[in-house]
Amino acid sequence: MICVSHLSKRFAHNEVLKEINLNIGQGEVVAIIGPSGSGKSTLLRCLNLLEKPNTGIIRIGNVTLDSEHYSSKEESNLRRQSAMVFQHYNLFKNKTALENITYPLIAGQKMDKTEAKQRGLSLLERVGMLPYAKQYPVTLSGGQQQRVAIARALAVRPKVLLFDEPTSALDPERVHEVLQVMLQLAKEKITMVIVTHEMEFAKYVADRIIFMANGVIVEEGIAKSVINNPQHELTQRFLRQLTDEFDFEI
Ligand SMILES: Nc1ncnc2c1ncn2[C@@H]1O[C@H](COP(=O)(O)OP(=O)(O)OP(=O)(O)O)[C@@H](O)[C@H]1O
Ligand SMILES: [Mg+2]
Image (cartoon, rainbow, N blue to C red):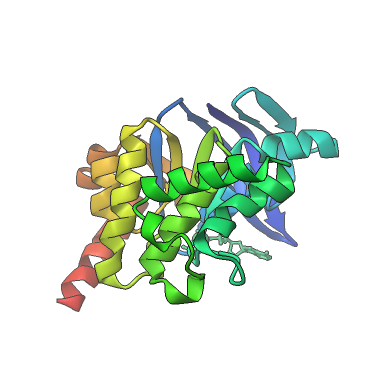
């Protein structure tokens, strides 16, 4: 479903992604973990061209793009293959939960209003947010807003969902409801790439874990084995630090 080869990205002289190669299958759930600044968000953002890679070829579904030469049509085709869920939800504040979902369909895809509304309502139901359809984001909790954001991402029927730390801005008691929705999507075999610090969730839901550091993929493998038995020293150190932080909180 996703095939990335030799993807590089630099900001001025800062080489943030170094020749990344990545293959993700249809229906696979992949979690990306790694220290702050390792390039996780940049990698996700490159996949839907929120950042322009310097080199590399990206294929999602049946759309391929060479990041060194592409047309605006190829760009919009590739963008349409994926949808992103952000840490801070990024909902339109002046639109209701339902309008947040229907607006991109009506304005972007020129969908008929009745059809957009039907799709919006059924997606709100899928994420348990139907009773809140007419509410504005400011009246919803973080977890509720994030569930609307997931429904909005699903509305365009992307081949791939990209999540950038979807639960890290939430109050701890709200994390569960968002993870629950993501778990459901994983069961439905939606291809997902999730940048997360939720190791237990990653272990439980992800088929594969990718550990990144300094702009490269250092280690990857079946989720349980990477977390329980990391091979690379950097992975071991990263996971140990997470455990230490956890102990500290207790
Ligand atoms: N728009 C930008 N302009 C300049 N530098 C950037 C930009 N975005 C990211 N960077 C730099 O790229 C590097 C990787 O950043 P990125 O946000 O991808 O890391 P990350 O792994 O997602 O970190 P975190 O866990 O803190 O979210 C960092 O050194 C960051 O400062
Ligand atoms: Mg990030």
